[in-house]
Image (tube, rainbow, N blue to C red; front, side):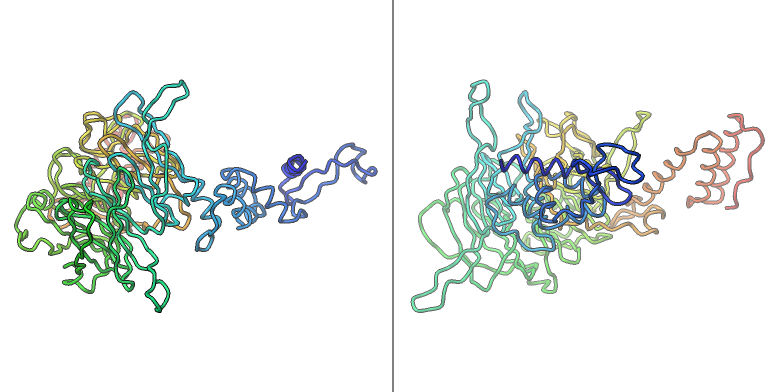
Length: 604
């Protein structure tokens, strides 16, 4: 009976009509008598404004709709926009999506953020080998509060949610619908630990080396006898990735609070870099080959040289590989540590400033704008600045820099993507405003968003083993891969066997890109950062694309000729060059049947 009454109320509520004098619903009760001016029409009923319904009833009915329909309903009128945007509706939706979620978190819109995080969460993967090369979805833990980051290891996948819970997604043998036993990836899950802040493993792109998982967490330490109560202290816990068993734990002083952990170095000299809330870097060295031995010992936590030599710098985030570390400051500056001469030569093209006796000395990169995030491969890297431009640097043997050739770059160089126009002619345009960037051993991936808000995946470099779906021979420039990207994809990772994409939408994570200044957007070609070679950072190419769209909008050939003459006058050319183009356009116009000599070109 309760379901029937709810269904009836929902049917009465959804019978909407009219938008000009407010939304109104028809009441099906019989009229008491003919109304004046009604003309004796029967069955019309008396219209009642939807605003007369109790707000609690409207919110209760709307909460049963799917999230996609609620967003669409909120775009119909101002009243439904206010109702569908209320925290009461999203609180009911959040409890329906995640019944075990007790705390909605902080922020301006906590319930709406929590509901959308849990509605859009998902981990998708596509295997490179085998017969099935389609996108699959892993199991979704019911206890997870959205997905913040993930890390695939040799056998399993680890996911960290926004509540600090670290999940352990296992591969297992399951029974298919046809009764066959098959090996399925990430089909079962368990909770590894709670209170986690960050986690890391071996930084190499090959998951075979990821034997241990290092988890940065907060734990309550019991107080002494007769002393004060327990205190929350940060610690690093080490787990076996194969079984999830904890084998080692390091606890720090309660006055030290960390927010990120990365690893660098070999197994016998594994360096753990810890980033504090104040932007300082601390490091300690452990021997992974002795972690499984049941003994306790003390390790020394020391301040990293980048924080000792440059105490005024406040590091915002870190990225590492086996032989190098990259730091991004809160002001957008980039500093580098390179620990081997081979990687240094690949990245910078020379060994001029490499000091084998002082490998922790930070090197500053010269960049034209503030850097927001980065990706670090074995011998190449990618940087994204505040204007959404992508700069690549390092070894380019397989075309993994996406510059269109296979020449190494010792300085950050902006790259471009190659596509095809309607006339099947290759077009080159610069990549702008990526969502995520990933650099592997010899290929790179970019997650971008098109004009219709759909996501697409671009890749360049070596295509062996299917790592660039649709491009088995690889590509020296970024090309669109044959992968169906989820609508809310936010990060990606590629291993030797599989491509992973994480889906989760955070409404408080707004785009931080800025528009290019007019001088850079329409000015002349600028040089490559730190060199004298000609390299366009995206301004001239962007202006030329705008000119082509204006020419394409003209209907006739004569209009296009006139528009081209006008564009020639705008371009920063010499006077002799402008006269040449104007005269050539006049000749083409006369040859096409344009008649007279045409209008006089504007003065240069």
